[in-house]
Length: 380
Image 1 (cartoon, rainbow, N blue to C red):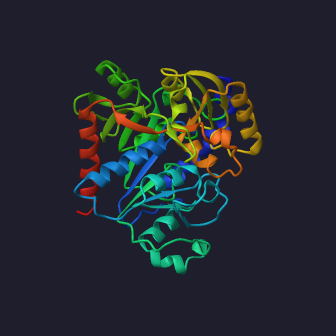
Image 2 (spheres, helix red, strand yellow; image 1 turned 120 degrees about the horizontal axis):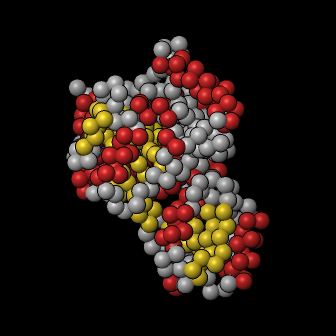
Image 3 (cartoon, helix red, strand yellow; image 1 turned 45 degrees about the vertical axis):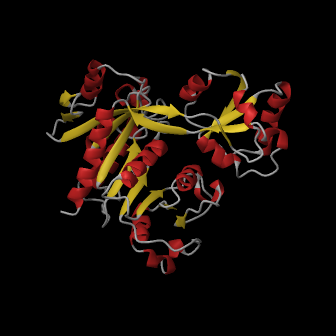
């Protein structure tokens, strides 16, 4: 009860902000090409980046979009650069942020850009000739890009000045929004009621198997009536049909970060883990199957690593000289920005690649059909 009283000003501020956008008091724009927003209402930890990558794979494998020019637009959290920037594979986390750089390295044929102003960013992606005239792009360096045919908006659900054509909203299975609280008492950065704006709701980080009864319970918690686990569809209070899906995390085998790495360390029974992500529990559970985690370093999400951090890890290495050192894909991007990493660390430092997948082939088919069908409707 106390938290509701203390958070009342924050709650009312959010309500007023959304009211202004919903009723035309503040202007809302759209993009001339289809836009897919991958967002959440929780502060971090729902898996936006691997889901963005999954969407790109779906589009690139489809007959509709395999030969089109796709783009990803991100804010570029904690980057030092300003304005609009085109992400280059050989660039740094400092320039673009860790997640945009990770996406660019995995999808070199996709245009990845960063800009806090999503309206301007989308406009430049659709009209790249404006790179020469827009003030916010005057410091942008990189090759010429083709006009975007579709833009995936990474973490833009709270950016109300731009209305996405399709909203895909993620909810962490381990942190149900209906049981959470607004920051700082909980992890919510937006009102749970905004889930009504979602076209597709994905419950992420699920166990590998869920009973249909559990799926129905989630649907009821989201206010979806008549949810059918076979079609994965239900109806909200306004009579709008929504798709509810469930995904899980798939980790892959340890992969070297540096060329100098000795692959034999990947088979070590002892492991030193460090990460700067919202929650490392699933990663620890995966690694614990084949390794004994003898030392664990936890840093804040999007942590910028320093030489002092490397010294801490090196001390653990000296205490356990046969141990492998592991981290996440996202942290890997930040580690590569550092100079003067000791050779003793380079030879034993590995990353754990991550993907997301649906709990069933049926759900995967529903997602692909819903996504591609909605995009076809855009041009009608």
